[in-house]
Length: 351
Image 1 (tube, rainbow, N blue to C red):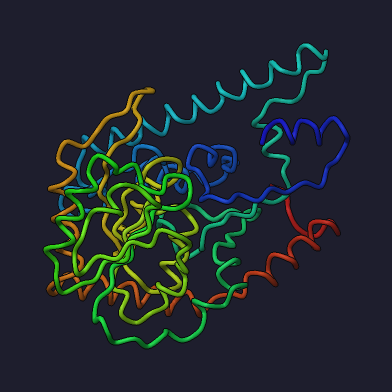
Image 2: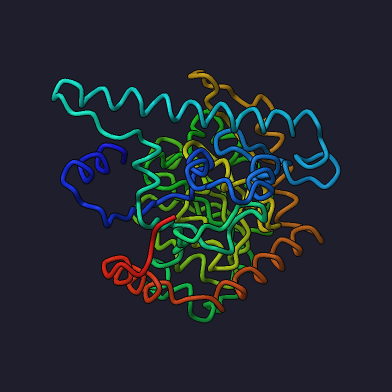
């Protein structure tokens, strides 16, 4: 991204905007604050988990980020580290221009000159303390609305009574869970009251594992149609931005197993909103992969909680409430196009 806006600057193009296919990364927020609302800035760094270091339980009312002093201080420190690291990365990337004898503006200055930012995140799928900015529009759901499947009434299906849909996107189809998948399937097998539709691509496990309540979807899976069914009670996902948006529109609770990028903070948002659980399997810390030695136990406990008993019902209720709230907002396509026209005409954008 910085390279493209350096080019725009060199060409004298002043009316610029960017479209993010992710959530708004916490490390970029430093460029939006203008010093006028110190309290808002202070609350953001205190209470919003840093993107890569968000943890399960951060929103636990007894021992979460707001109550646990150690976790609180750790999070503030992680924000500082991430902000500095981002600036250092862009200083390095700008060395590319030196051999051409061109010295672009600092990245933070280039970023602040962007007239408008469109973010593939729904405005109702954020933390309370994530600030609103005049030149940021959240359009998460524009693709969902275009397809129209999840904005209509739910598809009434009663048999089987419970479906848990399992999919981890297109980059890592197995969700980075290859070493654990046999154990995970054994856990699914025990929950006989629910059928598990699993999309993980073709592999040896899908060829050999057999269970009456497990179906492997080896080819394309109509994800939105599956989520739109009234009997789909749970979505086990990597919690990438598109899947997160689709689950909210569908009113289906999420069991999040993040792998990289903004998946960790989105998993934390699912817990914050009360529509999901966050279980981590591994994460990168200082260029080293750290594994969760208790992953299977954590996953088994979370799954049981989400598809049985009163807690399971509560997750469904919260997810349904969020769906109804979301369907009262929009359509995003019109807002997006109107804003683009406003930017071109000089009526929108700017800090």
